[in-house]
Structure formats: structure tokens, C-alpha cells
Amino acid sequence: MSGGLADEVAPGATGLEQLQALLAAGRMPGIGTSLQFTLTEIDTGRAVFEGTPGEHAYNPIGSVHGGYAASLLDSACGCAVHSTLSAAEAYTTVELKISYVRGMTKDTGPVRAEAVVVNRGRRVAFAEAKLTDATGRLLATASSTLLIIER
Image 1 (cartoon, rainbow, N blue to C red):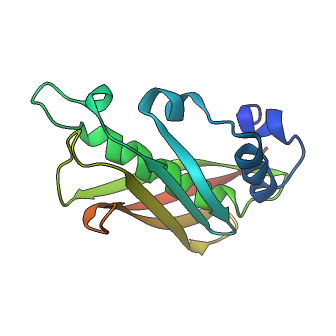
Image 2: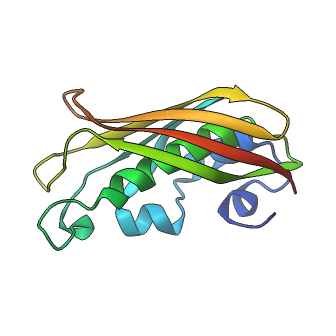
């Protein structure tokens, strides 16, 4: 697996270096553009995404679609693992479990998804994330299993 924005911004770099380069360049992939969220912090084994849910993410019943929270949490878990990769490794999500605690609307305001790597093996990594609002109220949690693959 190769290609993509991370390779474009920092070819041949480690996962952490790629994500740091994305942050420094102010670049984000299409999912962040379409759902209006962005990577704001990265460190080895830790990633933070922030966004503001609005009508752009509404479902037909008048609230933010659960996929918005899932996308933020999956992105945070994935980038937390990405930050642990060598230049010769890539990853893909194998499983993502989301628990929704509170719904969101356009009035929720800014939200923050923070993920940490719980365990990183040679072939499999596990990460956990939480999504909170600006007051720290829990909105959703996630646990993720990710497969580490050679590029």
C-alpha cells in the first residue's frame, strides 16, 4: 500500500514524520474537507482531531449522522497507529466499535476526538478514542483493531 497525501507530503518518511509534515503544511485529506474536521495534534501513539458538527453532517431526522462521530474516531485511531509506523509499513482498519453516548446537533459546537495506541504488535495494533465536546462531556467512544502491512 502506498500513495496518498501522506506520501505526497513526506515520501519515504516514518508515519510520525508524515503526519507532522501534513500538520506543518496545513494539508488534509478529502474526508476532512468534506466533513470539516482536521488533525490538530500528533505524537507517537497519540492523535487528536477537531471539528464542528453542523448541517453538512445531518441525517434526515435532524441531527448529526453517527458517521460523523465514527469518521472522527476512526481517523484519530488510525493516525495514532500511523504515528508508530516505519517508512516501510502501512495500516488498514480491520474493526471499529463505536459506542454513542450523546447525540450531536449544529448547536453542539466544537468536538475533539483523541486516540491513543493501547498495544502495537508487529502485525496488529489496538487503539482507543473518545469524542468530547468543548466542555469535556463525553459524546462517543471507540476501540479499533488495525492491521499493520508492508508497503
